[in-house]
Amino acid sequence: MKKAWIILAALIAGLLIGMAVGDRSPLFHDIADVVGTIWLNGLRMTVIPLVVALLITGIVQTANAASAGRTATRSVITMISILVLVTIMAAIVTPALLAIFPLDPDAAQALRQAMGAVEPAAAPPPFSEFLKAVVPTNPFQAAASDALLPLIIFTIAFAFAITRLEAGKKQILAGFFEAMAEAMVTVISWVLALAPIGVFALGVVLGMTAGAAAFGALVHYVLVVTAIGTIIMLSAYPVAMFGARFNLFDFARAAIPAQSVAISTQSSLASLPAMVQGAKQLGVGARSTDIVLPMAVAIFRATSPAMNLAVAIYVAHWMGIELGPEQIVIGVAVASITTLGSVSLPGSISFIAAIAPICIAMGIPIEPLAVLVAIETFPDIMRTLGNVTMDIAVTGTIARAEGDLEKGEAA
Image 1 (tube, rainbow, N blue to C red):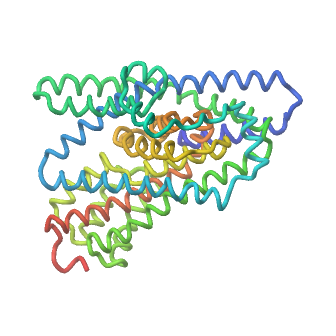
Image 2 (image 1 turned 30 degrees about the vertical axis):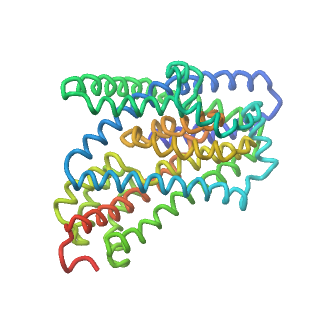
Image 3 (image 1 turned 180 degrees about the horizontal axis):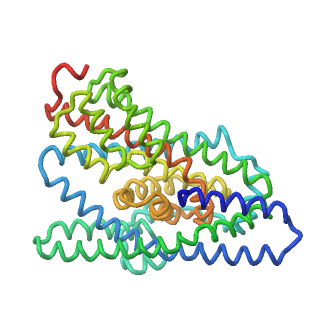
């Protein structure tokens, strides 16, 4: 049984027990609340060092990939452009979906009560003050105060400075942060090993406070976030038609084997052989399948920044926080950037590592993430499905630009 299903079972069990107990045992509520909060704090303590280490490692790896030749450079530029575009799409579509299909107000109020009181978001500063604060005067103070965007700006500058060092020094620093990232991943894996206990405890609190409304809210969350991934998956088809000039039906047929593996494994890496076969079926040459597809799996997940931002916006909706334009812009920037550092992580770890920084930067509480990670199994299917479909479409687009499509196979 996969760990994700065990965590989901723990959440459901906690919700059911909490609903059964109701408000008859304040002591049981307090014990569950303490256990859940301790586990949540264990997740919180890893966010800053993990984001810094992963972002530096991801930028160095991306820069190394881009320096491998013209095809690699074109691939990196194309992939980053798509990541930014789909993230902007999520910033527009997610609030629209929530406006059309909002969470039931009574359920939202019950969920907010279960998560504890949340201070209303502070009024955004004037835009000039916002710009002044983007560059930190002290990156350590920015880290200590959870000022994620200034910290990320410094981290990006530092990472690109590492790429300009001579080979020996670059290897030392890159190796240090790679080791730091691996150590932090180990720490967070220890915390996630206790996830069934922590999620069960949080589920008990949620069930005791929100009752049956919790189930409806979680289903609503899955539908909204999955809708964003569905849009990205469907957008891969026009990319294939207009970018690679594939026949729509040929592309759809060639993508089915990789999509089938994606649904069953929820792993882009496991889907790579089927993606290679599908790309070759469409006439993509060996140069592109050998370079672009593995690069796409390593540094490009088209659904990640958009669906991560959608999660953050949904949490704000859940907690009754009105997001201003500055917060949305910050969310787009952080979601687009941090995806470079989390693409190689297991799903449950990347969920926390990628979404917590977005929430913190936007001034959104991260407490709901500890519950939402338990049901990430369902959106994660669409994440992987959208990723592999877009990977094949982008590979075909790069192959056409590089003259690496075999005649007679593509429309």
